[in-house]
Length: 386
Ligand SMILES: Cc1ncc(COP(=O)(O)O)c(C=O)c1O
Image (cartoon, helix red, strand yellow):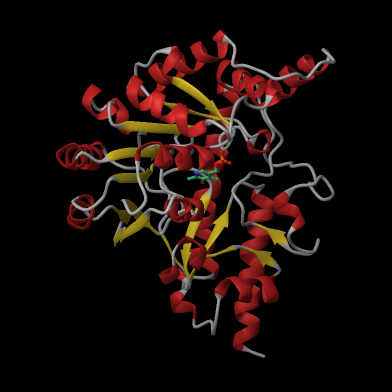
């Protein structure tokens, strides 16, 4: 089995990286959700091979790519789809926007669970729809959907924008909760738009279940959005896909694309094919590394900043940190940026009521992660004894 080196990451300064351009070079950027690791060598080789042909015209997804995705979904999630159910897109964000545009009319309500990835929160307003928000509940073991609040919300909504695995809490929905959501949506005739972009990075002990895989009747009312971008660290290639098994829903979705998206990035398609076909071993190795980072973060927070409340995520590389007990005056994001030179995402980005939280991206080397926690702990200690 090939070995991959996640303890070394290339410098991204001056590479036109969004993450590494926002702050001065002395700040550790741990905000936007991409990872610092080199892409799988299998993907780099596939792109190099494609570069040898010097024409980069408009591209379509080759049959082989559709078949690889069909195979992957069947093997890993037991979900059977057909190649033609897949609609390629330049991103999951455009995908959930098109999904809402395709089926709803101004004034309709869209249910969303907070805290939530900001573009999901903002999407309804783009189409003059109303966002109905219900908070996740925090139990001893972490965040969970609130079934009572969900049922009440779904009674008013025309669509549910689900995010599973959930960003920023890292919650992976159980089969029982998904079945509950699906049954409520069926009873109320609610469209399900399911953002599953983080589905390939689920840690040991949890299982990803595409909501549409529960039953054909659920798939009939669901638009699922996926991508190789988060898992294989290729989000700059702007390629994702929707799976829509219901032909009427697919055709309405195609209508919503029109005038905005025709074809998809040539290199993104090549990289996506190489990811699903060739880079499974790299993905498994990455998952192990991320899981150790997740556990390391938990231990280090306990050791150095026990005032932070942290529920280790069940998937992906984002940690949702409750800083409310730290006694920071004002925004913890600004405090850690100024005093610790660590660039986190501010909690209020994920919902107005989460100002006491920050989101930390641990898709980085263990050394950078340790440095960040030490800097944060140092800043808090320095504040206590000026
Ligand atoms: C839940 C979720 N959906 C969508 C996206 C963005 O996807 P894309 O870059 O494909 O639009 C992200 C990126 O962080 C995300 O976390």
